[in-house]
Structure formats: C-alpha cells, structure tokens
Length: 391
Image (cartoon, rainbow, N blue to C red; front, side):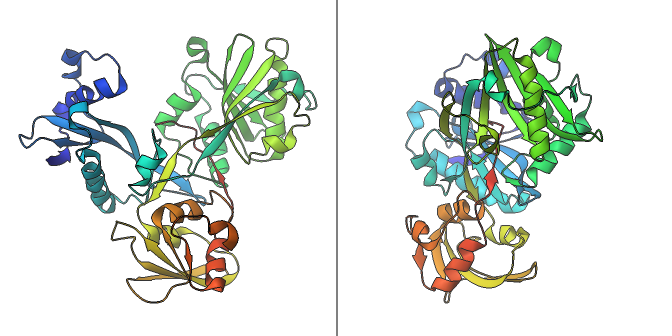
C-alpha cells in the first residue's frame, strides 16, 4: 500500500472512489478535467495508480477560548468496496496525523457515520445541537423591531464578521468566517437564492445579531442565529415576529443545547425539540492547547494523556496563578489524573461540566490525587459549543 497526497491533476481518482460510497453520479470525463485545490490523501495499490481510499483534509481555523487555532477538518472519507477492511483509512489517518505538526494543526473535527468507528482514531463526540419548532405566535412576548438591514451580494460583510467573532469569544469550535463562510452560511444573492440574512443593530447603530433563514410552506427556518447579548437576541427574534402574517411556524436549526434562546422562551407546551448528535473532535497537540487556555484562580494539576500520538502521550503539568501559567511535559513520573485522548478532548473543550463522580464514567479515567484531579476538571467548566457548518 502506498499512502500519499493526490497530485493536482488526479483529483478525478477521488471522485472515482467517492462515486459508489456516496452513491452520486459522476461524469468521469469532466472529473478528469478538474483540478485539486485542497489537500487530499489517498491510499493506492503498489502500482501507485489504483486508488483504494481517500480523505479530504480541510485546512481551517476554529475557536478555542476566544482564539482561532489551526484545525484539521476531515471530510470525504471513502474506501472502494473491494478494498474495505484492509486498513486503508487507518494508514491515511496516520499520514494526516504526521502532517499535523508540520502544518501546525492543533485540533481536528469530523462528522461521523459511526461514533464507534472514529473513536478508534482518537475522536470523541463534542458537539450536540437542538432543532426547535414553535408557532410564530410564541414570539409575541417580544417587541417588534425594524432595526435591521438585509445582507445583499456581499455588502455588510464587516458587520456580520464583527457579530460572528463576538459570538465566538464565548463559543468553542466555531469555524473562522472566511470567504467560504459567507457563501455557505449567509448566501450571496437573496433575490436569487431566497435565502435571507438580516442584521440587527442597536440604538447606536452597532451590529449585534443576525439570522439567516429560508421560508417554505408557511415555515420560516432559521439556519443560523448569531447574537452578542440578551438585547441583540431579543432584537433579532423581535424582527422575526414581523413574519407572523406570512408564516405559521418558526424552526431553529442547530441551536446549542445550552442556548439562551431556551431561557427567553415563555411557553413550552407547543414547542417541539429534536436532539442531534453532531461533530466529533480530536486533540492533535495537547501542550499547545493547554498553553492557550487562560486559567482562573490559582492551582496545579498534572494529567497523563493516553494517546497513540507520541506528541500527546505524555504527562502534562499545569501551574497557574492570576492568569499566568506554566506548562511542562514529561514521559514518566507521578500524576494526578490519567485519561484517554478521547476524554481529554471532551473535557478541555468544555463539552460538559464534570466533577469527579461524573468523570468516573469516562473511559480510562483514573484518579491518583483527588485535589489535582479536581483542579484539572475545574479548569475546564462547561462551555458553549457551536458548529454551524457541515463539512
């Protein structure tokens, strides 16, 4: 087996591999004319021509406690049926993880077809969301507002960016809003696409929130809801009230399970809520992420991370006081708590709040020193997680 990056002029081989796996038609003649613009790693037979499997690697940045860190996005994982269960995907992941240090990737995300399958590669479920559906009349407690502007054909980008970045300061996992975000998230031409993004402004004309939505058969579906504080959330929801003569129902897609939207609503008898389990994450450079985090108060903990990646398979000691911290690592010696990379990822992203009793249900969680283990868990309290884009 040969594992390597696909060349610019052989991206048609990725289409070839994906055709059966994703069951979509491919014009191979046109596919042969397409050029690879990103990173695609494939597993080939020893002839270095016949592709067996491939993974698209997305070079992204995602939010981590107010910063946007280099991130590996995993997409398009496929193996031809005749080569499945031959270890192709594992070898490609090994290559991508080797590339991570050179490219500076500190964390990775993917959307799984199976959580058990990707857990074998160190990933863990980190991002759940709710789909809420309610009669638009349930927003009647909010004052109507017209303090909004419609995003059209590229205008107001800076206003959307400022709202998104402000939202990201309190949410982990958000993808940095580059040019792709504007096209896939907020659309390009509302008159053509019938996809609308309205930005709400405060009394001082500062952008504070936006909502992207479509309308179909008396249902207004909010695909993305971003806000900076209570006033902005109330403002953008108050604007949506203006559609009450046009639609009967409002549907919110991908609302965080701890979203303040749930705190504002007054009545829940007619509310429908569906829980979705979404993305998985994996820490690729534990020490860098531990250094990025700002720690409250003062304390110390040492955590032993169990990982197949040598860069993470260490004991990390963190000492912090008054916002400053010192982080060191070693291979052997005493530690306060040990856990697998999957649980480590889950905890440091703040995907849930843990005490020692709750953490005992995590796989491979071992406490050696209660005080240090508590300091570790307290350093990463529950934090909002949002990921709007399905890559």
